[in-house]
Amino acid sequence: MIDFLLSGDALMALLTLTFLEIILGIDNILFISISAGKLPQEQRKKATNIGLLLALVQRVILLFFVSYLTKLKTPFWVVESSWISFELNVQSLILMLGGLFLLYKSTTEIMEKLETNKEEKLKESKPKTLKDVLLQILIIDLVFSIDSILTAVGMTSGLHSNSNYTLILMITAVIISIIVMIAFANKIREVIERHPSMQILGLAFLILIAFLLITESAHVSHAVVFNNEVGVIPKGYLYFAIAFSLGVEIINIRMKKSNLKKKSNTKVEE
Image 1 (cartoon, helix red, strand yellow):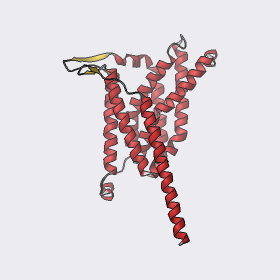
Image 2 (cartoon, rainbow, N blue to C red):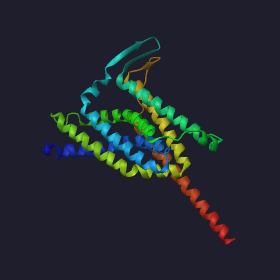
Image 3 (cartoon, one colour):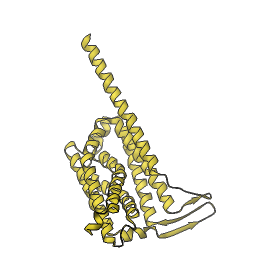
Image 4 (tube, rainbow, N blue to C red):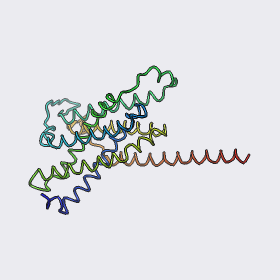
């Protein structure tokens, strides 16, 4: 086993898989950061770390049931009509429900932030508890975990005849990626909390991710609408949009800080 794990193919697969796990975890970090922001200040870091640790435990457990996960594509409800047809399976159902849940949470959060009478709204609303936030994180992480695990299975397929060796490789990649995410998640959350525009941007990203999950659900179930098969949206488009938008927002934040410094210096000179 050691010889396999130290081989060039295994190390390259580990690096690639770890990188992909971190990239796929961006949406998870966004959701955890925004959800943790609903808690009192002293509980936010704790919720972020626990949320990511729960993600680690959940993904490792799912890896041990990877043979079952590959069977999630077996359809249990088939619909065929003149204008729509699909083969609903457990994987597509989980993706659909996760996308709808994420869409609901994102839109309600945006609506709350757009309330004109914000102070009264905050007084009337009950504060979120750590248990409620962790439950939400656990639910949405299940959706992200399945996507992540199936990606890992596809990448490590055929590396070795012994499936236990590839299982250890996948678990190692997941552990490393979660450690990296824990190292940066709280810093990301603090940046989002300091800048309200970043919060709206993050929620907008979650809406995009929700639509991505819904279309992926339709693609997995081989949905055909008006003789047109629903295709999957490449995730590279989403990550490029996130990177580009963040870049523009960072420039805007720096410009605002620069303008504030200029105004303060002008007042001092006067």
